[in-house]
Length: 465
Image 1 (cartoon, rainbow, N blue to C red):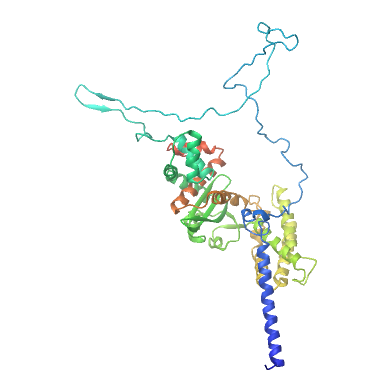
Image 2 (spheres, rainbow, N blue to C red):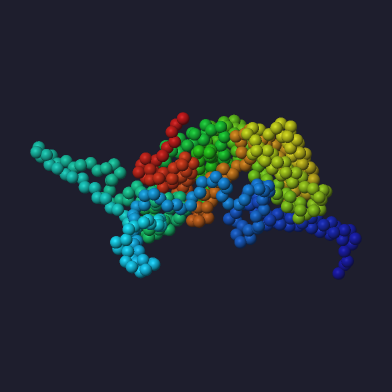
């Protein structure tokens, strides 16, 4: 066997070195993905499983003691002045001498109250439409009430409970039907659960139009989107919300087509709080306010990579991302502690610190996929600095987009508990009812009361301004 020449060995060393560099980059990228969690990325908390790390927050201690604060309105069970039933318990004999107390004067009593449910049973109301025959020979039957249109049917309250369990507490159709049968001792089929939900959702067309109009006319609104399984495929829930209104829609597309279908962003001219998802930039008429909680998670991932790879950068003891985090959190504290915008000179100082650090991130980030992500983040901070700092210049703009994330957290919880929806129509019904429940809750209306109005055929609709 002929020995390799010097040139062949040199070429082999060069190719192996290139391969090692490529493998190192791949290993670093895989390690980065393994280290992703809700604190340094947009992965949901449910993905952590039993490997959930110890809590670690970038927030500064508030100095307050844990638990309810002074002045908080408590919800402790308290006695009522007018109980539904009073049961008297008489002492049988004197604890002193043992004599009978039947004729002894009453000197007082001690009150103890038990809060419980009465025995639950279905109340059946029979409507009899009386028929009478006139002297002229004509036979006339009385009209049935508007909502009574079948020989046997469920009433609005039990239908509201069905929708509440299925769409408000995220039970499956089977578990909803089983719960109704066990709680109220009445048979309910999965088909009844589906038809009750469909009728309720179909009665929300006027509600949806009004809420979408109100959000589109708002000065500030939150927007977000999340994946949702429907009809065996990945669909997207699009959320638009304000402090008083929530509108969620389901679409097969995540980008502008799905956003347009929600009928809010194409007409919206206020300040839109969102993450850095590119399709939002295709609405030139809106003012952008980017979520700092999102970018903070990305910056945390950079600092963690820097700490785990001290030689990956030319600067070992300092990380550009940490400077950005410090400035953003300092500005947040200043904005939270004032009723107006942050002082211009203070804002200018931190803006300059952020941009300077981001420029270092562009030039000092390592090579490979990880470094490419870090450079993209740094460039975005430079180009969108005003959108990230909007909260420091406009008092109505929040620091983060947590309000929108709260809106889509419930759909994600529903998917975790009972899976996705079997049909796209079912997903659309879920989105409409979730919008109704969230919006009525923001207006102080109890969910079961709002659903009872809906199943009665009189859904709550916000007044037009």
